[in-house]
Image (cartoon, rainbow, N blue to C red; front, top):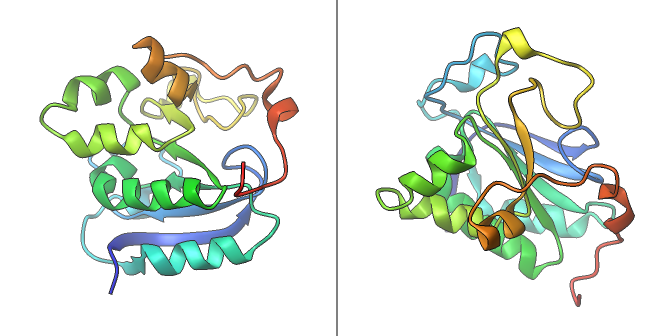
Amino acid sequence: MGTKLNLSGVVSESIVDGPGIRMTLFTQGCPHHCKGCHNPETWAFEPRHSGDIDKILAVAVKNPILQGLTFSGGEPFCQAEALSQLARKCHENGLNVMCYTGYTFEQLIEGGEKHPEWIKLLENCDYLVDGKFELEQKSLMLLFRGSKNQRFLNVPESLKQGKAVKVNEDTLYLGTKKRDKNN
């Protein structure tokens, strides 16, 4: 048996959780408890639904229209070790990875010494929406974000530069291409 995730649920095809058509995994367990949270049922850390990363990947790879997987929550970084393995396998199969987190990019980097699995997950993500949801800053006009304090980040570029680098939303879909695991 493979590595397991504690999941709240799975959406097999989503167009609202990142660029392109994606499979979205909602992790179970979150320490943030943001006021106005879209998924408060994901807060408890008790086991809900067990998901085997190899089985999840097999389902995703069989779907030719998927461009990637999104890890949402709950708080994905509470299951960073297993998700980093799944993210690496996604890349090996031509799928990109997006992750939501209530932590900021800077908090994840700073916490990486105590939680090296956070860095492993970051290293295997393409996109990150960081920061807690803030009800007072809620906006329905933001791409893939719920509140104005959250950032939509290019993770490889952020890691390369050692600072948060936002995705250029104006050109985001220009670089979106059909999945090709040989690229």
